[in-house]
Length: 458
View 1 (cartoon, one colour):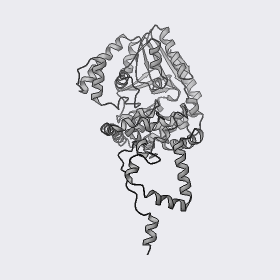
View 2: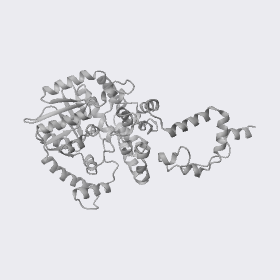
View 3: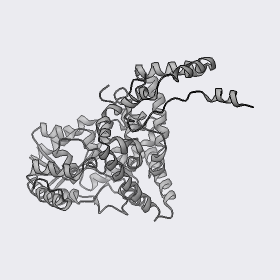
């Protein structure tokens, strides 16, 4: 299977220097998160409170969704409901057409990435510019984000410099971050000025007021919302919190967990449209009710998309976000992906060591390792088997069930030199398939422990 996580990670792992750099960059974010955690004496209580708020909200989700809609409409916002990705795309395009908008500035939204909004709008003749710097970089490169918070984390500054030189005519070879950021700012300012409409994602929806809250570090969402007369907010139905008191818990957790900041630079509350402005909220399902209705996996809807599980995951840090072939990568993405296709995403729950580090950092205490383990069991039963893996497991099971067979097999195995195993000729092809090329397979010992013990038992 060409599209499996193991195969997709090969190219990234091959460049060991870049792999080490990627690993260190993400661990830097994890370390900053830990420093912020240590400044909050009641951090664990805060996490437990956030989890309880999310569970409470999910237990009464239809009620809170209705309350949110009613209050948003009272505020003058137009509310739309999208059952799936196709409806989100169609509703968005319809709003833009009704308002004669031909160009759009868009702030970061993993929901719209999930629903394929950009390519659809471009196909329909709209000009769409992502205004988050990381998103703009990957858009210019025609790539998908590799991380939900730092979407261009897989790229080094020299690669960004080459992209900007090709697409924006910046100085060739100038990879100074200040220079590149200034060039992007200058170009994006022109895009903001000429655009007809703005689209944003939503971090939180406040049911008691009908408010949407958008958290950014660059102010790009505010630039779009405050300068355009047509504004669209795209919100997953799980983003609700009951009120402002509950919201305060999550704003204390989000930036600290994501990037190790006390709070995002801009935490913007959009409640009412400005005069002569139309403002829309599209509430999106797109498989979320499938997760909601599954008692084993409902807790995954607590996720606030902070990316902390990715920053700490040893597999994600070493294999890169693009190896996950799903919009949301890393541990949480591997939990969500099977709901969007069990067969095509059956490999992702296995892209984990089950070390539990993701559980330790999740601000809403999702049992990610436990859910990944449960998916492994379910997908093994409910999807077509990997033939080589099945044969290997069947053989291993027969060998381990019989003491005599095990003893004979280990004796035979001793005749295979470690160099042969290292070459990838072994039945499971461990070194070649899974990228463990840094590991040296040792020569097999000349005798087993049982034989050694029998000889030396006196």
